[in-house]
Length: 115
Image (cartoon, rainbow, N blue to C red; front, side, top):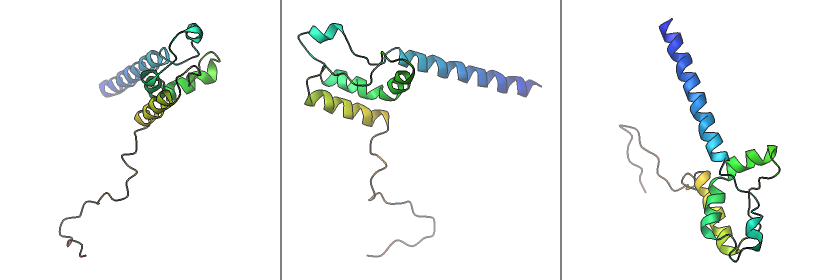
């Protein structure tokens, strides 16, 4: 009985923590900044990096809220795009597993490969 109560408590706690994190991140979702349309400086590298990093959350929110966008249209071009792509690679884990030259671990007792 006690174990069942602990599992339920842990499951509810994990659900509440996940919900809190998702709601907090969705509050930072990117959108078209109407005030920035007439601003002197368009979105640059750092804002592109931020928008790329929160893109997965912003995309999910944009499915339900049409005022949320995943890309700032008022930007300075190349630097914003570079930051955005770099932020996307951070959000999706980069290319750390894309290398094919990574040697595999040998099992114990297996002879070393000969050239």
